[in-house]
Amino acid sequence: MDFLFLMNSKFLSLKIFTFRELFYSKHTTMSNTTLNLNAQLYDYLLKVSLRESEVQKALREETAKMPEHNMQISPEQGQFMRLLVQLIGAQNGIEIGVFTGYSTLSMALGLPEDGQLIALDVSEEWTNVGQKYWEMAGVVHKIDLRIGPALDTLQQLVAEGKEESFDFAFIDADKENYYNYYDYCLRLLRPNGLIAIDNVLWSGKVADMENAEPETLAIRDLNEKLSKDDRIDLSLLPLSDGVTLIRKK
Ligand SMILES: C[S@@+](CC[C@H](N)C(=O)[O-])C[C@H]1O[C@@H](n2cnc3c(N)ncnc32)[C@H](O)[C@@H]1O
Image 1 (cartoon, rainbow, N blue to C red):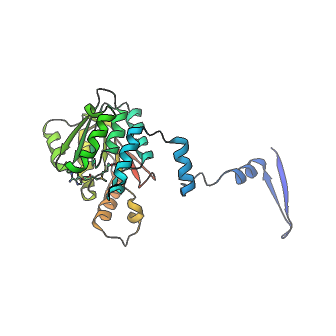
Image 2: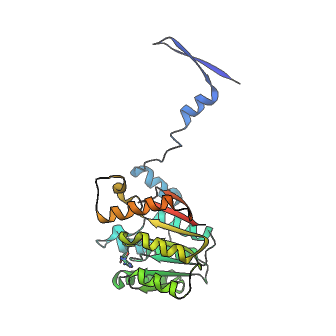
Image 3: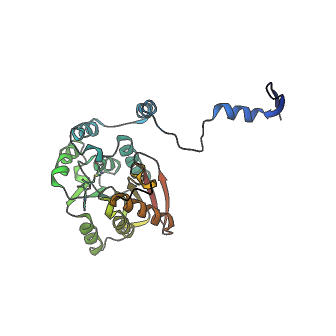
């Protein structure tokens, strides 16, 4: 083994370093913690990895003009969702919370030509925005949009005998119902199916125990229940506003 002797002149102490210690002290920056992205690093991330189609970009730009535009997932999250759908070889899935359809479009792009995404939302107005982009992207035939309270539609899917028949679910609607959505999705998913839940870090409010807003309480309660749920494996990713990935055992 190679050693280096370094003399610290102030305290006249001698320390023996291996080359490995020196190399890692110089070349690693906290690989065991998660980086905070500043604007420069975020731009870099997008520059070297984002593959957004022209149609996705156009939908994002139209949505950006709306006052509620912050509800839309980020483009890199859309790409991640698409990759997940491709990775598990999904044939079908459920989306809860469509808004103007950017996440819907991203996931539909990851499905095969005969794949199907049942997309649930209460708003005709917002989902209408997405329709024309789904058509332009050539994925509209994969999307089965159901307007109405998502709990009713999920209940209906169970009543139709669709338990254990879906490959994935994405939950991104009203936060107070998150646990109910999760519970239904778990029933509707096949074993090894994937659930992704958005906004689980809720702009950091979940970790502020003085914050007792109903949405914060609902997400905090969900996170705690998930952490103890042995029907699943999970990982909480600090991507965008926090995404929990769940594998149904
Ligand atoms: C955060 S947005 C979804 C954003 C979308 N995933 C995207 O990336 O653009 C939440 C959506 O949930 C819908 N929503 C709220 N309550 C609902 C309910 N009870 N049932 C179905 N959809 C609901 C809203 O209309 C809204 O479009």
